[in-house]
Structure formats: structure tokens, C-alpha cells
Image (cartoon, rainbow, N blue to C red):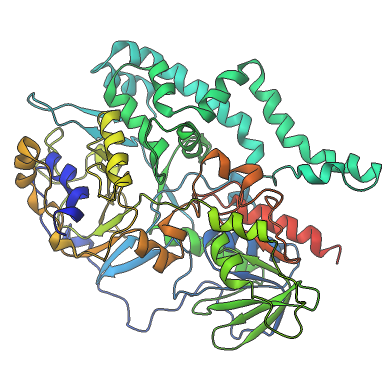
Length: 592
């Protein structure tokens, strides 16, 4: 078991000089909070009421965003969270006494700019620390010293880095960035509106059909913006990312570094058709007006969730932790009328929005027709249930959080004597990712049920409120039979890589936790451990997310809406699903 579960650390050790366990920069150590300080505090109401206009199941970031918009529109709204902390996967937790971690999600970029502005998140305490440079790939090669690739927003410096491997690629890189930027701008309108309901276009009176045509506006805007380049952009959406990058570049370190964004969170190889869209999804964000920029949230990702919760609470929303929903309450006509909690409490509402995954929402929370007041017919159409059951939730993600006593030192970029962070310490550090063949090998290992040897390392050197190191494989085991303590991790590489690995054998310590896909499912409710609530392949996007004819946030149960990552436009800390679902629900509420 030790050998099977240590693959994530192997590539890390092969590039590290020496990092010891226990504490990292002891001046950053803080004593743990009081034992009773477990309840979420942002917006916690004095008492749960028995009736609201809207109830949101789950206080993940999308659920909190939805609640803020619902309350902003004047709907009395409550949020009910199963865990003791708000944020879903966007949380800061004290795993090791005195050490805080962004336990699951760890970076911010995709949150929609409208949400920043509408909810005044900066006023509610959100502070983001931009990453520049943002990507570091140390190479393990037979030369002294080994090279590394550092990518940042300074184009001249980035081109200089790329030129180490190919002058041609250095010249092509600005054009590639511009090409991808134009595509992101073209697709941007599709993120902030429900997908087109094609079935509704031909329904109702002629006047109603003409009104329904307005829903085509975002799609038409995207088509016009893509213009004559549409065939090239279509290729990016549908082709393997390896094919796209081969068109632009020749150097493997650059292609592999870029390709990691096409396979992160996806059980896919760079050679998998459609992997180009996953890369595109990860560059759709914006940070402080800079397209494609990523940053760390000061205080960890939980600080973002707290800011959103504060925005919702300031408008009057009631937000509760440790309130697990058992099932949705249904009326005589099968419509949602509120929720029942596990403690037996019933909370009535006209609207119910679920931030849970489609699987939990429709297969667990919608009750079967066992009660006398529920009509004998099934509440959900069979084809809908089958579609939800067939959603691909295969996950390649394992998240490792550890407390360390110093910054990692790489053979390709040794630490300074004073031990202070260097530019690459704020980057996503790509390990065993200097060639697309290594990424494909990681996918092959994962498909066979083995941990991969490729991964990403994220030292939290940017924020003195955090003092931790996160690591995770780019592709890992779909399932592991049990949780594995960190002290069982050992190098698994053979030959030279293993020898170099032993030199950094203490880079991973016993202080932290490993979150395999079963852990991510159990703790955060991520189906199959999938960080997106379902694969981001083209057959599970837009019209088809989570199921055809139900991509517009409404469900087969009247009054029940899906507002989480399992809805359009998908995963990532984006907030778009929460905002869009709330707007649809508000419109329906006004017609009740």
C-alpha cells in the first residue's frame, strides 16, 4: 500500500533538495482557536424560522451566491449547510493545530466579475493576492544545473524563459495568448445566462415563440464574435489539446506545462478529444481586470466564502451550519414546498435551490412516492433519472495538505540562503510534467487504478495567515481502498529518479491529510470525488448539463432548482451557476 499511494510524492522528491516536517516558518505559527469555535459565524441567524420564500440546500460558494441574489431581490432566504463550516469545497480549515489550509479548492480566478461588483465582496473583506509569475516547471535532466520554465504576465520575461527551449516557441507565444484570449471573450456571454431551451422555441403562441428567441442572444453574440475563425475555435473545443499545442509549439516543457490545465480535474489525457475545452475553461477567469490571471485568497478560500456569506447576511439572509437536509418536501401536485432536516424539523418555502450535486439532489433528496399525499406516478421522469445516474463523475484528483518547516528547494532552483520565498514559490509547481508523454502516462496509470507520478505543488508562501503546502496529482486513482497516513508515502520511481527522490525523502511530513476521491465525496459531497460535480466533457456541457431539456436550472420538480457546479456552466469557483439559477428562480417567483 505504501508503494501504491506514494506516487504523488515521487516526482516532488525527485526535484526537491530538502524540506523537513513539522513547522514551516515558526513565526507564522498560531495557537489553535477555542475548541467550541466550530459553528460558521457569517450571517448565522438567531433562530431558524419555519417558513421562507426560498431555501438553499448547501452553503458552497454557489449556494451562498444564489442566496445573496435571492435576498437582494427581496425574497426571504435561508441557507442550510450540513457541515460545521461554510463554503463547500472553498473552505479554510485548521487540519493541524495552529495551521490553516485551503483544504480543497486553493486558487481564485473564475469568479464572475458581476458577482464581485453586485455583492461588494471587497467591502465584505475579500482580498486576493495575484500570482505573478504563476507557473513553474522544474525539469529533471542530465545537465547541471537542471533547467526550469517560469511563466508569468511579463511577456518579455516569459519569452526569455521559453527561448531556453525554443526561440520559435518564444516568438509564437504572444500570438497563441491573443488567440486564446479572443476565444474566451467570444464565449464569455454564454457563462452568464441559462443555455438556450431549444424545446421551448417552438412552444406557445407566436408571440411567446418570438419572446423565446431572445434567449438565443448570448449564443448569437458568441457566434458573431468568433466570426471567420469559427472553424479554428471549433477545433480547440473538440480536438485533443496535444493536437492544438503541436500546431503552435515544438518544445515539450512548454506544451506540457500548458496542457496540465487541460487535464486538471479531468480523467483525461492530453490526447483525449475535447480536452482543449477544459484548458479553455481554466483561462476564462479574470482577476482585478486582468484576463486569465489567478490568485490566492488572503486567509484561504474560506475567506471568499465568508465574504459571500457576509454579503448575503447583510441583506437579511439567514445562514446556518450543521443543518443537514434529509429530503425535499413535496406538495400534492409534486411541487417543492420546502425541506425536512435530519432532526425532523420542516422548513417551508415556495422555492428550493440545491447547491448539492445532481446525484444527491435528484437521487437522494427528492423522495420516492411512498406517502399518501404524493401522487402514485413517479416524481422524476425515468429518462431524466437514467441520465443523472449515467453522468460521468470519474475523478483523478487527490489533494494532499501538509504542514512543513521550510520552503521546498528545487534542484533546478535552489532556495536562497536567507530562506525567504522566491518568485516560483507562489506558483503552481508542475512535477513530472515536463513532457506531454508524462501527462499521458499519468492518465494511463489512473485508468488502471494506480496513483500517478505527475502532480502539482502549491506552497502557501504568499499568505502569513496560512503556513502549509498542498500537493496533488494531475491524474490519480479513481478509487483507493482506504485513507493512507502521510508517513506511508515513499518514492516509487526506479533508477535515477528514485535515487534523487531519496535525497528529498523528508519533503512530505506526517502533519496533514490526504484527500482521495472517496474522501472528497464523503467530506464535501463531490460525486465520485469529481471537483466539477461531473466531467467537463462536451457531452456534459451547456444543453446537456445536467441533462437535456433541464439545463436551465429548473428541474422536473416544479419549484426545485439546481444551482451548483453540476449545472451550467460547470465547475470551478465561478459562482455563475448560483447567480444564474437565482435569477431564473426570482423570475418564476414573481409569476407565482
